[in-house]
Amino acid sequence: MKVQIWVAAMEKQPPLSIKIIRDDNVDQPDDMVIQVMECLNEPGLDSPAIKHSIYKLPFFMRRTHSEAFNQAFDPQVVSFGPYHHGKQHLSPMEREKAKVFDSLKTGGLPVEAIVSCVSTILYDLLESYDRLEEEWTQHPGKFLKLMIVDGCFMLQLFCNCPTSLSNMKMDIRLDTLLLENQLPLKLLHKLYSIAGPIFISQQPKATYFISPFFFFFFFFFHLYTSKCTLELKSVVCNWLGISTNNLVQEFLHVLDMYRASLVCTHVDWTNWNQKKELSGAECQVIPPATELREAGMRFKTSGTTSLGDVKYDKKNVMAFEKLNPLCPS
Image 1 (spheres, rainbow, N blue to C red):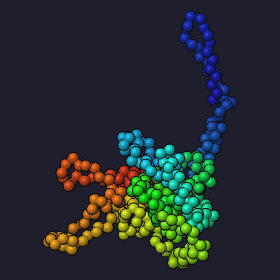
Image 2 (image 1 turned 180 degrees about the vertical axis):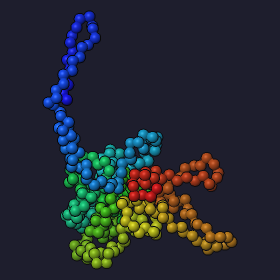
Image 3 (image 1 turned 180 degrees about the horizontal axis):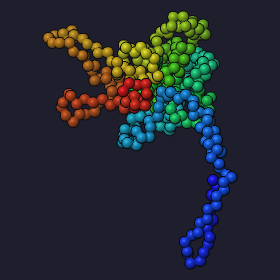
Image 4 (image 1 turned 60 degrees about the horizontal axis):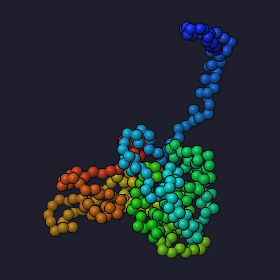
């Protein structure tokens, strides 16, 4: 139905006169139904849901919490992935990434093979990220480069942290456990399967060239034995300071692996008599505070003298569990 409205101007500000003219030849119900059906049948409405594994903190969660809470999700030293890439306070570490990548290339990193291999899972990597900006979706080459550079940098940290970053190792470790600062583990598997010996053999203080024969020997040895000095799972666990016990399933990223270690923690019981010449039942030995701090735990002064008011702050783990439908509640 087409509606035409005209207003008659009259003197002394009388009420406005409105006239409605009906046109029965326009927008018939059949035409409207056809148009709606065409819109509903557009591609994308019936496509399978994309399963993301790396998330941005939703607006409703940021809005309902304090600024200090929100800062717990932002990296302080280094960015991994697209969400925080390019932020000014993280730019010094971008230069470190470039240095590490150049050092890896000098050490024999097969860049062409890596690009070819990672490109085969490019679509899966893009789908891993929730609410990815067009800067990345419209420029897959730029996204591929980011994945390779960040992935190689992360693996180098895990396998052999450069000496120049040793004093920041604990801060970097915390950034690798942030919700919005993850890399898909399938990416790390691809990189490690191709160049695991390169990452492991890189020396913190010196860089040297590994002959192609040496590299291919280790590469094919890995293919035939399914082991490469250390399995990737062990490398990640060593970096995080967690046990590999009970970590048998496939993981999405480093934060997912860390969460699993908390859920399936193996209680390390030891006989107290073996440690102290005291009688008593078995008890769980708690690591010293220095070891806990090196593993990434932060301590704050308590307002009481009680030992029963210890609280743990795992904002990023809980946010991941809330956003990922596959995580048990």
